[in-house]
Length: 278
Image (cartoon, rainbow, N blue to C red):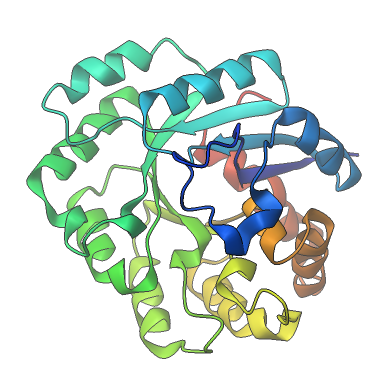
């Protein structure tokens, strides 16, 4: 039975200018990735649904993902982009509010200054989300966690999810400061965390599951199975791994957990957080 949700993946028609972040070290993903590429991977790994997340910062991106979702029933949710700093943010959110599969928004904060989430114009945008029941995905590097902690503290009613476990430096093995901040942000009831994007923070060519285990230990201990969800970060994950290997790595890690606890991470938590119609 296919009863899993991939809470975090991307689609794109590759554009070397727009997608300049996909540099020559990432040649494996310098091409188009569309629903027909993902669907067999989902089926093979027991997934029935996914959430498509923005990869570029434009409303065109949001419209592109919504169009794909309208044509592919297995895409149950979209996390789009809108300029949260726009003085007319309410008008923009109202414009999108008739799209039932649009569940929330994300900004690539990892590419911004470390104080970006403290800025009034950005926070004005965050404040506008809750009346529309939109979620917000926090995409940051680990050094930006203090600003994220301040953000989630200011908006206790806004549902947040941390992408890619806040991108710790798995390659170097540095863990202490990240661990302290993750334990702190996990205390907030409105914050969840995606088990995603880990292999791309590890040594792409030489990582092994034991490199990830200390970081998984921290997020499981801090967030518990009630506040974690699986995301593949496909196709970005392809630079360091493949879909089946990611799934097997988490399956192996969770073997000691009761099946119903595992199911929360594979299915229920993402379904509830994004209010997916399944």
